[in-house]
Image (tube, rainbow over all chains, first blue to last red; front, side, top):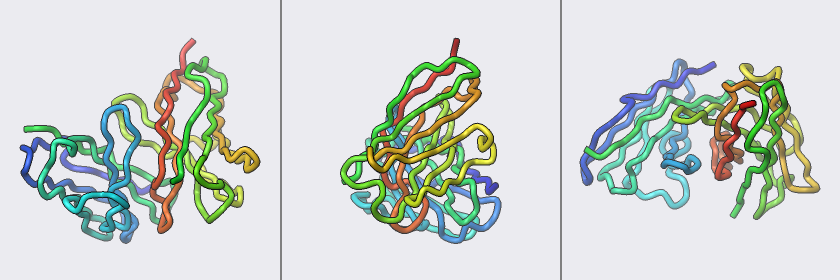
Length: 108
Length: 120
């Protein structure tokens, strides 16, 4: 099983500031990495797939980078609606599909 | 626009079988080449992939749950289902159904989720 590790667990950021979230895979997943945003009481929402491709309707302030085992989600200028929990997920050929433990982005 | 909706009992007794159904609208479950998955999330915790079924009916399960899980599809009703046997309190979670994307096995469309509590 590929273990996904996200850091930090909690990120305190002021509105308008930049947020950088990290995700590390225990072995290479190539670019088969997705990012999701989840707000309380809601299902996860796909933000990024293929490590760097924004899903339909996702604002340009969200960007993803990385390949292999190290990945980053950057939110360039945090808006009020961006405070949420973010998960990464690998979908390489290895099963089971696995998620990181999440990073909570909170208002500083 | 594809939409998914989970349904099933919100309360299941320990040792019994949890049964949930995901109804797909806005498209046929048998069209295209997609995986249809179940994912769960205990309160305050992260996401756990349970398993999936392909359009053809082939299945993959998380090894940690494989002995207790069955996922099936009913194309006539445009639904797929989850059965989890011998449940315990550890199976209490919000259960989501999802469909993968056009370019990989990420969750492109998700249901709103349904809370299942295991308790006597």
